[in-house]
Image (tube, rainbow, N blue to C red; front, side, top):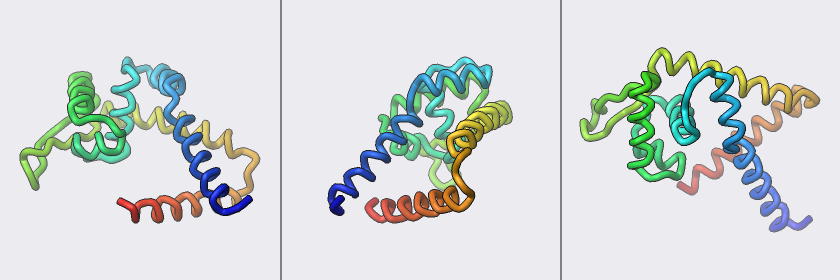
Amino acid sequence: MNMNMMENEIFKALIDIVAIINRPDRDKKMIAQAGINLEGAAFRVFVGIGHLQPTSVGDLAALMGKNYSSVSRQIDKLEAAGLVRTYPSSEDSRIRLSELTDDGEKIISMINVTRQRIMREALAEWTPEEKNGLLNNLRRLIEALNKFD
């Protein structure tokens, strides 16, 4: 396989991974297992806040590829549900930061346990060396791709 084809196949594989991770039916299962009542859009914002916290609406919208106002609406729903708290940034009071509440942290922990189980099962036949190689290569790819920002 020539290099252009190889790079194209790597990109396609990454898109496949993102598609698997972002499947709404997986989100619904995790929402049900966590015992929470969140629609898919709010769930993704919730998980994004858990990953980046504290985070601004703008940074979260950029990460998710969504517009500012739709992310802001989901944050408002999460705050009303007691899962997220928001406050003005100490550096710029025009920027609203969001982070998980204690209840939100408990739920994200349940979600993380489910995700860890899924990954453990997916990698069950991999050797520790193969897992380590995957992790190192993913980190290396992330670092290389971040140079294009």
